[in-house]
Length: 365
Image (cartoon, rainbow, N blue to C red; front, side, top):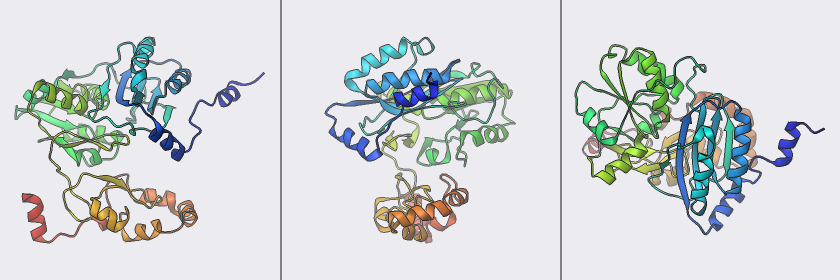
């Protein structure tokens, strides 16, 4: 009798094509796709079984994306063929745990937002470093519309906190928001709680990309004793839609970082960040061409051409080596390099050396 593990291998419940082949298939498509994200905190008793069932059906529908399934719920960012959209929604809503789950449709649609279907079973759908049941995840803060969020920000006594990572808030954030120099939500939760520990009686406004981190954060802060916790419902994605549809004032500065092939969504016309190498205005995120570094940093088009997408002279040299030599270098230095560099906070050597005049130009640009 065959084991369940052997049966799963025979079913091939995962993508077997290379990225190159997947991208070729995308280029050959003659239909549009809908970029969508959704999440729900709900108990899933058998996450692996749920994951396998979703993969079978979504693969058949031609869906692509990155989905996390855990005992505490689901977190998905996906690209769905437009002609299968209604079928996708109907079948998802037929699953008891996901009935009427709200969708966040991407502001900018791009058929190349994802190139494969990847569904992974995780301990948490958002890693917070806490144990399941440590606080009541359903005791969340008040959900605010874009109009309500704008009005609440007018109160000078309100505390606005960006619950996203540094590389997200660097290119875009709400005016006056507290933005923390962190790379992970796990690190940010206790840091924010400590920073605002003396403001437990203030109105707390939280926001993130699509709302999922704020669901956890608001429950966490209520558990910590904050009495007036509020969150932007649907995150920056929903905020943009509501601002445009209702003709509201846009209080978000810059662009909204997204975790797919689009890189970012334009919220307004402003670019508030600067290239980490020359200091000119730029909100283009790239990963260092040296795979053993892979640093995420901001690089303008001129610097990308000049430095061949590398963050330093050393990395530029390594990236110019043959693929085989790079592979050998990565085997030897890859793990140590990842410890040396954080995911996004840039090392001093790639920070631009600016003259006083260049600094003034950036300030008054």
